[in-house]
Amino acid sequence: MLVGLDVLRRGRNSTARRRLQDANVGLLTHQAAVDGEGLQTILALKNLNITPSIIFSPEHGLDGLAQAEEAVTKDEADVGSIPLISLYGSTKESLTPTPSNLEGLDVLVIDLVDVGSRYYTYVWTALLAARAAARAGIHTMVLDRPNPIGGDPVQLEGRPQDAELLSFVGLESIPIRHCMTLGEILVSLFNQEEESLGRDGALSVVPTEGWERHGLANAFGRPFVPPSPNMPTAETALLYPGGCLLEGTNLSEGRGTTTPFSLVGAPFIDGGKLAQALGTIPGLWLRPTRFQPTFDKHAGKVCGGLMLHVHNERTFRPVAAYLSIINEARRQAPDDFELLSRVYEFEDKHPAFDLLSGTPKARELLQAGADSQELIDLLCPVDEEWTIRVESAEDLLQESRA
Image (tube, rainbow, N blue to C red; front, side, top):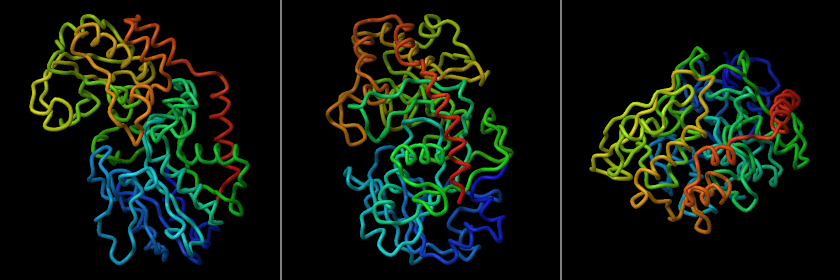
């Protein structure tokens, strides 16, 4: 299986490669974006005689050192004399390249590792950058990568969010588990905006080769490189579409431990009772445990809870699983369980749980003591039109080849 960077490297006489060698190039990337030999994009491009004149980094910084929601006002990664601009500062405005950042560029190259969930911010950084480039008359070329949690539309889960709840954990309305690559999302959105695609248009893509859509990261034949500090394994990525919902609650998602998003709990939770109340969840083992986060929620306190182990990737539905876990935790400790109201990803008008779930109705059902199945029925089903959207995005990707 070859990612877009591999395809570019292999295509000695390809149009895309010749174009970049003759252009003034900007690059949006991070440390997890590597080729089939483990070489990061910046170095891989330099080996092709393509040296970016400016580099942009997403959330967590180029080296992936910053924690979630931690502003990187000045990225300190070592890129020699090349200007390095963080696209995750302390304001919403910092999320988009400025016209002066893009001045003089011919092509903006994007190579980022996504994990297949609407909340993960890299695809939205890519979208904002590509839109800014289009406004400036600069072509964007995406070096695409496979979706590590699969591209089979059968796995779609989590209704698209309401229009008033668009945010940096979902700038456009798409399912939580979207089953698309970063390149497919961008070409789909640019096509809807009637932007021209392909080598002469606003956006083109160097697609992956040899990726089978039903294949998850463990079938790629290459190591999983953690794209952010709390995304250490491919199983973490599979849990994340459900596990990130915990960020809207006072339940720990395991940040501050070595197994983030595999853990859920709090000092007021009894893991054994929680597991018993939940019973069997398809594709998942629930193991009662205790853990002690070193930072983030409940830092330094012993938490009771569960460790989640996926034993069947095909039957496991992460959003449904975590909705059940959250609801049963609330039932167990109604006086201690809370939905958080702090500023979340630059938004202060809506609770984090609303932004993540995509509708205030989920929070209202949770607070009203609804049955878990009611929450699942509300949030998890995805309209058939999204199966068509995923399939058409794959076709669009081929039409937009660089």
